[in-house]
Amino acid sequence: MHLKTLTLRGFKSFASATTLSFEPGVTCVVGPNGSGKSNVVDALSWVMGEQGAKTLRGGKMEDVIFAGTSGRPPLGRAEVSLTIDNTDGALPIDYSEVTITRTLFRTGGSEYAINGAQCRLLDIQELLSDSGLGREMHVIVGQGRLDTVLRATPEERRGFIEEAAGVLKHRKRKEKALRK
Ligand code: ATP
Ligand code: MG
Image 1 (spheres, protein in one colour):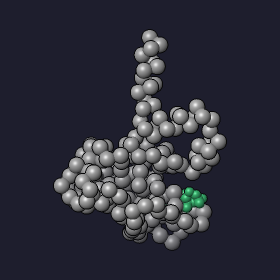
Image 2: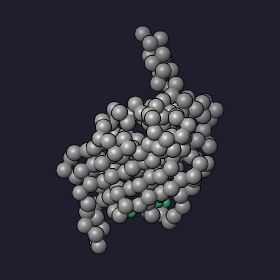
Image 3: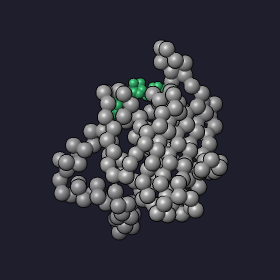
């Protein structure tokens, strides 16, 4: 399984439809400050179901919709599509290619779709959750966080690994139970 393409339409600074294609392996996105690199990463989190506006570096969810510039009026909706190569069947769905789409309207409504068929957020979360993607499964190291990781003490580093592996919440639960 690998990510094939990411298409942004009216998402943050990407007013016009923009498609990024990824090959298997490591992908680097380079560009000047403010050119939208972090916005691409935000789009990836968002389409996979991220619900926290702060995680997306905004105050409210509506902030992901293109807000307009001096030469271009604001848009009424943001839409992001992520196409995943599923030839190895890592996603439990009978398609070799899976496209998930999330749309948010400035009027407040939001829509989700799998391969063009409208669905619930829960369907997307369930589709991704067994594959190492989706909520609390993939890991995005935010800007400036790499230093924190590199300078961490062995104990802190263990915490990061536990968080990435998803065991931190279980350990916290265990500690809480033992305190009682
Ligand atoms: P750096 O190298 O400094 O980290 P970057 O390439 O990661 O920069 P981003 O943070 O992705 O840059 O993009 C910031 C730009 O996106 C800013 O110019 C900001 O105005 C613009 N932007 C963010 N949200 C919106 C929005 N809703 N509508 C229009 N533009 C937006
Ligand atoms: Mg950035």
